[in-house]
Image (tube, rainbow, N blue to C red; front, side, top):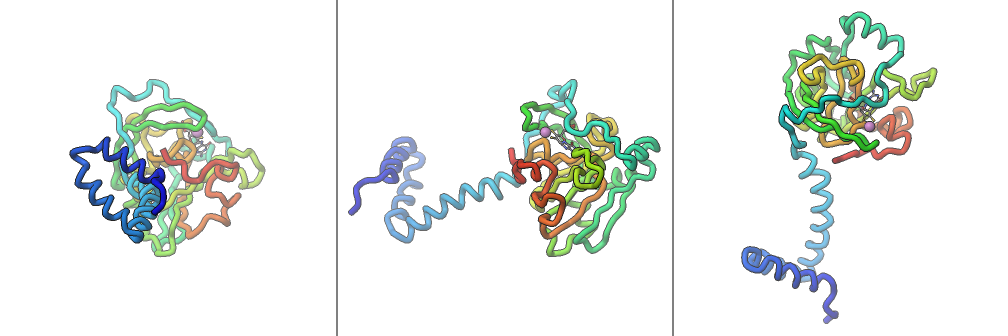
Length: 261
Ligand SMILES: Nc1nc2c(c(=O)[nH]1)N[C@H]1C(S)=C(S)[C@@H](COP(=O)(O)O)O[C@H]1N2
Ligand SMILES: [Mo]
């Protein structure tokens, strides 16, 4: 027999902590962990649990929602706040009358939706907190079209695994499209009930500083995933061929692709 290791010590400690209510469950654990097969299963279950919590359980949970009195009086804006790209400026000047959101790529029925059409899609309103990696957080009320039903309307092909959001602004300031802001999310986030193409902020049309006419809200992730000035959604199997290949403007510059909070 091997000497008592950390595993045994921890079990002893747990027994103390859970004496009573947890006793039955621990007894079952002991039984399982005493058989070699059971031990292997437990070890892999531990790894699985961590991963599952991060990738499945947590990811389907709702982000915290706040009450109206918690809305920030002055929500900061960051990154592009007034894009100077000619096509975008033209849209601002005519009040987004000719603006359309394109949904294409790996879909059965490519869509092009005017702002009015987008506003008539299944929607949701939520008060959530935006957390920027630069160290600030603000709370706002967002209203927008739920992304899931929109994707169903377009009909994702079975090869589709990510939704790439192409934006109007060139944050990189390059002469070509290489500095264009973009982001990508997987289908778990795309179908999350709080994932919106938001066209209203605090009951007003989305201001230019915050991404007019439409921005993404993907509430379980950090600020840089919340793409503003969204022009086109592209369903893809892979994003390695897009821009720097890491799935987003900041990802191409070293940030994590999955910015979960
Ligand atoms: N198109 C576009 N989307 C963007 C950015 C940007 O520069 N361009 N900045 C990102 C970052 S880092 C943050 S914190 C938020 C800021 O959103 P806000 O201006 O509404 O606060 O937008 C994100 N989405
Ligand atoms: Mo940010």
